[in-house]
Picture 1: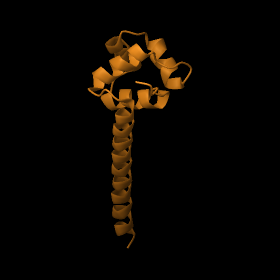
Picture 2: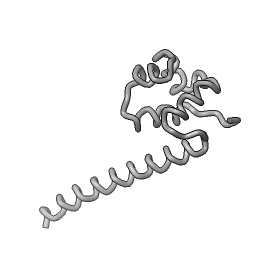
Picture 3: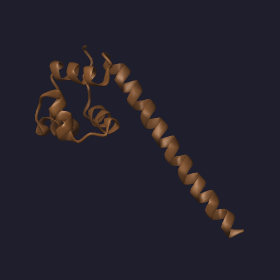
Picture 4: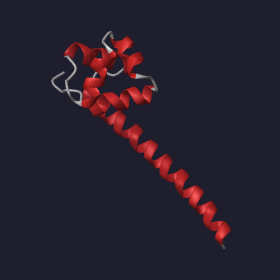
Amino acid sequence: MDDLMHGEQIKLIRMILDISQREFADKLGVTQAQVSRWELGVYKPSRASIAKINRLVGVDNVRLIDSLVYSLTLHSAKEGIRESYEVNAKGSDHDN
């Protein structure tokens, strides 16, 4: 557990879970202000908080969480690009 969880990872995990900072904080037993500070990079979560986040998402390794977040972010980006492409393709069909 030497790896530290970064604010961006925490925010992405929370966003993937589709919950507010307050809901996330309640699940972890911390304040909403703490979650906000973690996400902004003002403070790093304690090892105990990292362990709680790991348990919440069912993963016990920060590198694995990082990989999952990257994969989900990449998937989301691909979907967004695909949707944009389809909309633009339909628009160009009408131009002909």
